[in-house]
Length: 166
Image 1 (cartoon, rainbow, N blue to C red):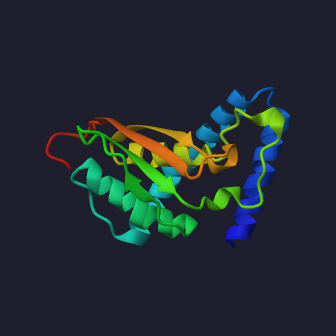
Image 2: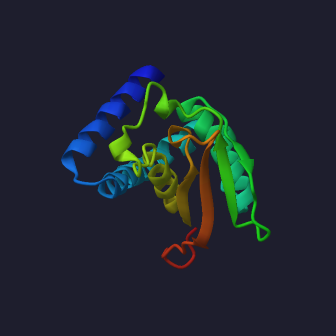
């Protein structure tokens, strides 16, 4: 199942590289596709995981790393590099299943191959009223020893619910 996903994802990225002129446009498309997946995936995640509302960003980080990544990708990234204010952290992926069987061609050195994950995280968290910035800062495909996703809390999104409803 995961191998099929990995190979299908590789075919998707290959097609995007053919359809768009530069890596930056491919990166934007991967983020956009991931965002749309995240917006929908959060409902499945909440239903299957029985996780309640997180009280702070640290709890959110734990849920993402220990439950969501495990549930959908079969891995558990480590959480490191917290900012002093507690509004920013890194997810370290020792093994990124999306890059199995992948080598980046020299002419795609600025491609962020797994950028779909950033969009998924951003879209899912937006649906639970958290605006975040998500980006790759290290990538094993580019010679780094680990893959690192940096997440920064921007703000809580206020609901526009009628008075008296929660």
